[in-house]
Image (cartoon, rainbow, N blue to C red; front, side, top):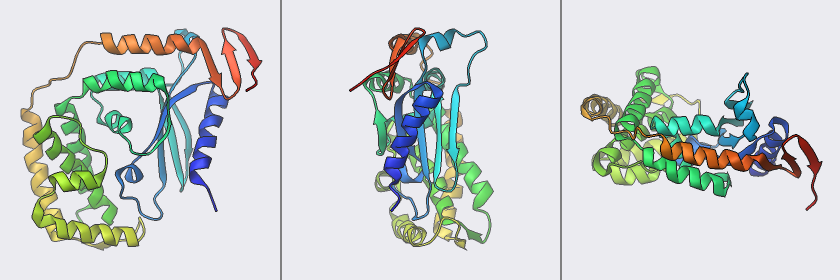
Length: 275
């Protein structure tokens, strides 16, 4: 039997060796992190890595993403630490979800420090626009026909419930769909949504099933309402870069001596280590 978790961990080690990076954090995102995966859902692995300090001084620069694998089972890609911190400054909602993912493949003390700083840059307006945009594009792209993929209901409902949570609590929403559902789903929709989730879980990701009128009506009305709320919110994002710069400098300074699966690199010297 295929051991997916072990395979993912091995691939993370392989990425470090071949790309000469240190992976600070690796998590599951998407339906498995949300707790609503179907039996044939793929694994969406996201990671943040740091390079050696000298790499950040190169005149030619280096790519700030690693796109490692994309097939029917695994979707693995990662961001450079610098890119991640820049997106924390923008209030990128995806990063806050990565920080709170319930499925963690790797976590380091360095990332804990980064995440503690990054969370201070949460923006209600930026997050609501992100979730509204996700729900709107899902609705317009996949939920207007007579037959729909039920996983697309989740992809529209979850960001809508996230917006309702932000509106009420003024903080980053939970990652798990079940928690959002318990806190933010109107009572009259509990039955229809539960039945939809049961049908989704028992079928395949690509199955086309009849529309659920109660759910689609809720999605339409909430999209109109959330659009107005997001526009009216003031842009309260933290503008100062000092804290992000400080944690970046500390983390990269530590990368002058990094261990990549038994290989130590310091300045231009390389030698194998034993454990």
